[in-house]
Length: 123
Image (tube, rainbow, N blue to C red; front, side, top):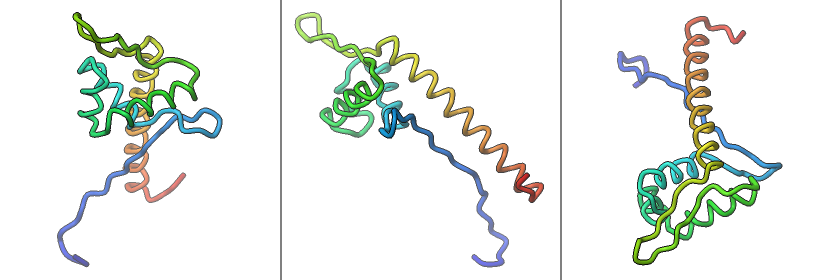
C-alpha cells in the first residue's frame, strides 16, 4: 500500500562464505549439513534433513575438503555394529568458527542498519 498506515518492518540479512583462492570452500549449506551430521550421526540422514541427495551431500563435503586441504568428516563403515559419520576435529572447529562468525556478522549488520536508519547518516 502506498501512503497507508501499514508498514513492513525492515531488517538487514547477511550471508558469508569462505573461499580458498577463488573457489567457494564453505558456506551456509555445508554448515547446515555438518550440523545435521552431528545431530544424526549419518551422512544419509543429514542429507535427507538438509533436503539434498546423498550424492550431492557427499560431493559438497569432498569438494570442500579438497579446497580446504583437510578432512571435515570421518566415515565409519557399516556392518554388524552399524556405521555412521562424525565430524573430524577440523570439521568441528571450522563449523564452530563459521557459526560464531555468522552470528557476529549478523548482529553487527543489524545494529549498523538500525543506527543508520535512526541517524540517517552513513558515517
